[in-house]
Image 1: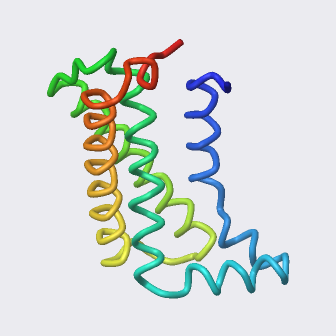
Image 2: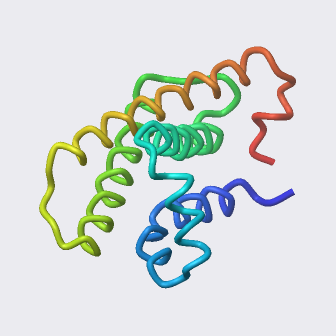
Length: 136
C-alpha cells in the first residue's frame, strides 16, 4: 500500500494542478472536462470532495487513532484554507481575472468539504477497526 504521506502529497499536487487550463489544449479531454464540470452543482461537489479527502488524509497523519484535539482540527482547517486559497489563486492566474464572489463561495464549499472529511475520519476512527487509521 502507498505510504500515506506520499498519497497526501500526490492528492495535494493533483488538486493544485490547473486541470481546466490543461483541458484547453487537449480537445477530447476538454470536452469531457466541460461535460463533467459545467453544471454548477458538480463544481461544488468536486470542491467539497477534493477538500474532504484532503482533510481525511491530513487527520489520518496528524491525529493518532481517535485523539482529535481542537488544536489539530484547527491546524487541519488552516492547511485546508491555505490550499484552497492557493488553488483559487492558481485558477485566477491562468484566467487573468481578479478575486470575486465565486472564489469566496468556493472557499466556503472547500471548508464544508473539509468538515465533512473530518467527520468521515471521526466515524472511521470510532466505528472501524484500528488498522484503517494506523499510520503504518
